[in-house]
Image 1 (spheres, rainbow, N blue to C red):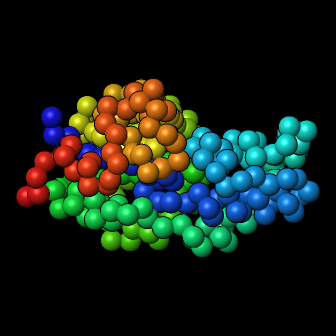
Image 2 (cartoon, helix red, strand yellow):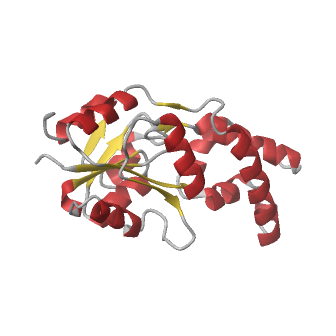
Image 3 (cartoon, rainbow, N blue to C red):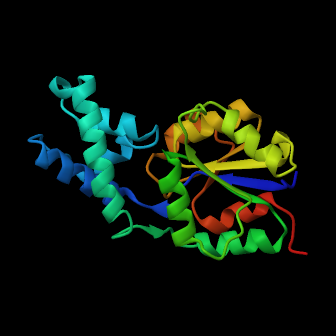
Length: 220
């Protein structure tokens, strides 16, 4: 089957953002008298929304609601100033997106990163890509792996779920794809290992960005 739309996760799929996320979090931890973490730990801290990121990074004895809220505000302020210091698109991603545009494939981005930051990142790193829809975590919409936002995005593209590929790098993304009835494509250059993607239902593992092109029709 040749699919007719693509929805991408952002962090770990389109952009390599782990260093900026981890360094902002570690600076915030240090400022509040908490120990930081090795950057590789953040591979497993991210992916389920910023509140979960904060809760995973904080020590167990600093988990009360007041502390989480205070820390969340401080982290957002730091990351808001440092989100593009080291972050870059992964190799091959701009070319992949351009190739999909040339084939007439509507594109979307769906992230558990806060919505405003998601939109800012996409606009900055991919200014020439005409995404049909870009959405991050919103208070009134369940976050991934709930399929609500993915299904709404497909409808906005005038595509059925079965016509869509959902591309991501974590279990959360594969669960989202399967819950929505979309084709789950895992990428191996992101934050989680191949085994996690397969365990959670990936039907394709892409080691290079261009490997995803085979899921779609030829250029017009």
